[in-house]
Amino acid sequence: LKLEAALRHAVERDEFELHYQPQLDMASGVIDGVEALVRWRRPGHGLVPPAEFIPVAEETGLIIPLGDWVLRAACAQQAAWRDAGLGDLRMAVNLSARQFKQQDLAQSVVQALHDTGCAAGRLELEITESVLMEHPDAATLVMEQLSDMGVKLSIDDFGSGYSSLAYLKRFPIHSLKIDRSFVHDISCDEDDAAIASAIIALAHSMKLNVIAEGVETGQQLAFLRREGCDHVQGYYFSRPLPAAELALLLARPP
Ligand code: G
Ligand code: G
Ligand code: MN
Ligand code: NA
Image (cartoon, rainbow, N blue to C red; front, side):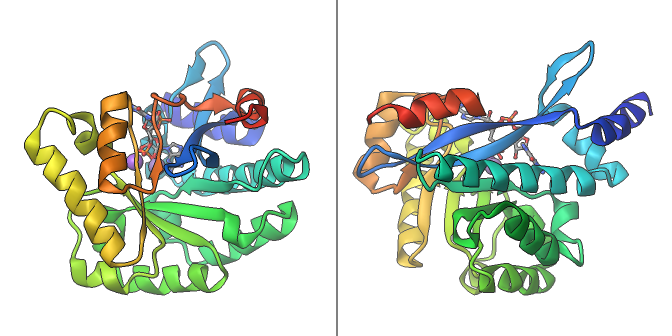
């Protein structure tokens, strides 16, 4: 309960900030996107990671105003970097189950894009497969609304939950994110290597982009490159960074 009250205040007082983790195009090595990851600058507690407050925000419904703040802040940052000549990056934003189930999600997205000047085609919403598969028909409708607007959709933590391939084909998605649990042992565990290769092949056969997350070593990168993975994200390149630090990476030649 204490955490809930503190979180409620935090939403009112704007105590959140976004960090951004770069996503690189495998072929060029260029940073062409970022994933926005929220942190809570809680007075007296330092920087609180999302795992410690997103679940409470979900339970209490505070994820709705918080998620809206995240969406707006991320879109505003996308437009600011673009206008500063630092690149017209893809901005990936995580959506929680509760946000995804909101009736007026598409309307909130339209409003955020309109108010910030971020182009719809530069926004990518990440949704986990468990959220999509919970109510796949309702999910399809919401995704179609977003997709019709030009917003990109990706399935986060792909492979860690349960996906029906029939639905995968029906969802208007743009990319799959290989769960980092498979990437971790890719160069020493044959099963994980086989799963990662299969996800890449599946994505390509469906004309989807595929991104590997949690890339930490050159060996993992080499494997993913051999298998034709399109994008990579992980500590090997960079941790999630505050906007000003990410801007320094963007300004640096590749
Ligand atoms: O940033 P970190 O690596 O600690 O993220 C941990 C988890 O928190 C990730 O699974 C991520 O999806 C989730 N997360 C981070 N930012 C957001 C956000 O803005 N909204 C939602 N719903 N989840 C987020
Ligand atoms: O939304 P998602 O669950 O994918 O959130 C990404 C999470 O993964 C964040 O908590 C981020 O800090 C974390 N992360 C990003 N890169 C790496 C990495 O290379 N290794 C590990 N272990 N975690 C990572
Ligand atoms: Mn994510
Ligand atoms: Na993920």
